[in-house]
Length: 350
Image 1 (tube, rainbow, N blue to C red):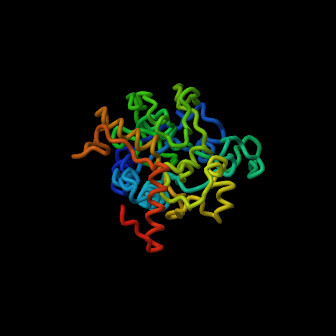
Image 2 (cartoon, rainbow, N blue to C red):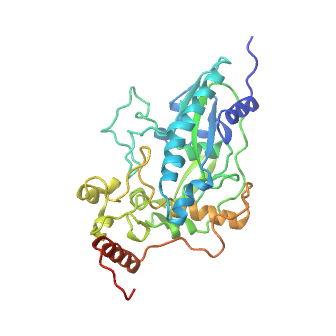
Image 3 (cartoon, rainbow, N blue to C red):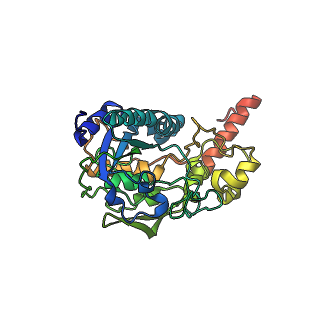
């Protein structure tokens, strides 16, 4: 006879297998989730949704915060977590649960939801078709933030980035669905986000509205966040504003940046597939903007308020310190200096 699998055992194993956070939600909490995003369609007999959180170490952002090293966050904080670390932990935990005779269905954070358009988040029936009447289109695009909220790990902030007491906005999630009836965690009742709007004001793309909001009601609770323009978000993230992009090719026109669509649009074509001047890292887009508002500004604010449970000897951003910005004057001056060095022309008056 197999021993009884408990929530405490699952959490202990999840931590031993690399997860920094683990919470459990009962499947009934997903009542109210739009069909295309509802994990209950992935595994109808599931009783529990196990959510694993993987911290993004604060130091992964240091180079972007200083404007000196941009590969760390994309390679280690995005690609490495989504494509290597979390899938391995998911596999190990799936095998552990199935050793007790319960089925475990992993939902990794590495796939594209073909049924939903990126720009509008609306159904895209031209990409897939339900296999029978009443089902959503494949792939069901699970919202990991909603799952994390229902599993009691924290709350969705105004920027729509998930916040936890331990790491603020610095983590990524995956989920595992199982028919094991595990004890769920209580839904988080704290208030990490104080709607300060610093995320929106600091976003270089102006992607987060300060006046319009979106919401979803699940488990009888309304979750609300600022309306997000995903195209503006994507463009800014990849360096669509010259004040925050030290890699721009010489001669790139600002209007091309402003007109750029997802993955660069016109600029992407005009500049031969690399309009930022900086390549992708580990299969992910270049993080030139580095989540300046929704993650870095938010973390600095949470640390200032003293609401995070994990403390550091030094602050992420010193009080009064402002993020860097590249002025037109500095860019022009630096370009002239480099041209002089290349040509060997030196101004003795300088």
